Image 1 (cartoon, rainbow, N blue to C red):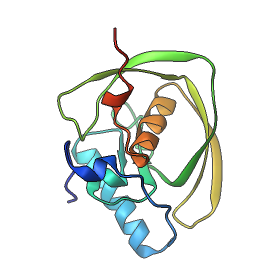
Image 2 (spheres, one colour):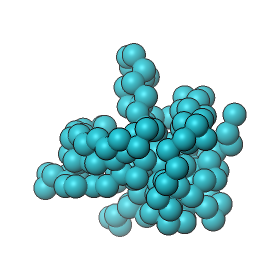
Image 3 (cartoon, rainbow, N blue to C red):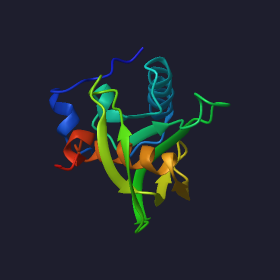
Length: 151
């Protein structure tokens, strides 16, 4: 089982490098990340949270309420975000016990590569958008505590 890194581990503040090899090692890392995420139990996990400074994250937004729907995102790119914003509480596996009230767009259009390197694009809304944006932030060394706005 992978160990989830917690603050103040410096890997959490690194700008992650693009994924360049779409091979068995990448697939193994992604599936190991999903296992660690489910065990935590979380809804998303980014590679730097397990000590790997690569532009890779995994999510499963609905597994706690329904059937598992694991997703793997390599080299994600935000294409657009909604103008409509919403403030909600977020937790982070790398900052246990510290909920953050974060304002984020309610929708995001994302492009990424799958484990085979093939491109994909989709629109995420609601909690799925929040989860994708939270994990995407990790790839740039940004934590949810950085997004908390002063009262």
